[in-house]
Length: 250
Length: 250
Image 1 (cartoon, each protein chain N blue to C red):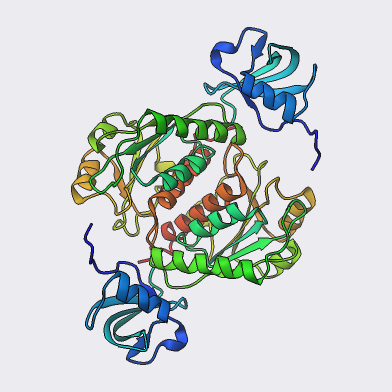
Image 2: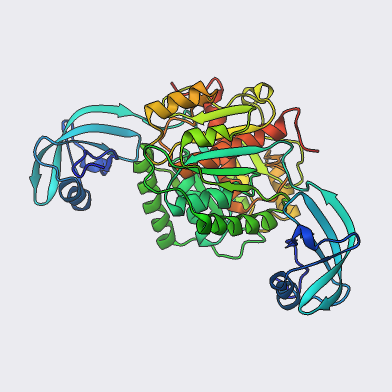
């Protein structure tokens, strides 16, 4: 591998650091661009702001350790699915939770909600843990060349989570929904709101509540999946449905 | 959580340790059953042999630290997909490789082949690393309540891997196959042979070779996925296709 190759991953830029013809990288991103990639005046790079904007730039100058980039081209919603995909996950332990974010961000999730359920062992995520997930999501966003940073929530109850959930196609992974797989592309509409139980599953009452809120129970297959494997699989199925249907991304 | 609850995960039994009416657990599995689950004579447990057999048993006796179980009932292919799903993965680093096995086993993969490709950094997996993956697969098999242990291979070249690949539906994840998603359930036939490139992707020659071997290029969506995320997603799509199609598992 070349040592001085151009960065193939975009840099993060805060939306408020973007002007009409130039943008300013944070000292941390600037350091990465200047030291790791040995950028100098004129070096091309790309940037994303987490709100759907993608910028093609070149280094114009360095002021007080911050790279000023000249904006050469802009694009909107690069790498994004045509419709939002949200997922409610019954709170698992921290390791599985990180895995869901690490795979779910590149797969296009627009909102994660880690929900305290009857069988969750952990408690609601505090600001510090949400901030850690946010950093993980940022890294995944850049790596996967997406442009919209997903929202991170942690609801104290399933009721609270469902109240904030999208309309559209609502699906819940259910171990006893044998034979009822993911709906075919021509049956899904608009955005996805997905739900996966905590380790041990949703309680009977929770399944009933989800059903009353129009979450359709589907089976993910004949063997038992962990919360993290089920979540990643369900996200992948929603992603594929969005690209296979009329909502196809061009 | 109860302290003495019955094991909800089957125990491993070697096929040669199964007689017509009883079976013998290894000292390690016996220790787990006796110490962790505090089993005694008459305690019910389940066992799998990795070759498709599932046994419902009760502890008959303990001889020289090995549990002898009376076989109460047998079942075949519990937790298995109706058809095999094999995956060739361009060799990633060890961490991603473990993730692919950890998620892929519960999802029903019948064979993993980690293949040395033009852009692979690592070398072919030796016996010791394959044995480590085998142990990981066993744990996943028990946890997910499957019964057939997937095969683990590591081919020295893509040619070698494809020569050993199943006929049936052959698919390769391709970053430039925009708009061509996973084929609908009524277009897939029989078993799946899936292929995912190493970090950096298959080379142009490798894609061409796969295409000449009837691997149909499909897109996994508009953003860039790592080898491990792409692998898990593709396996999940194949799994769903097998349960949604006429090959549905009852």
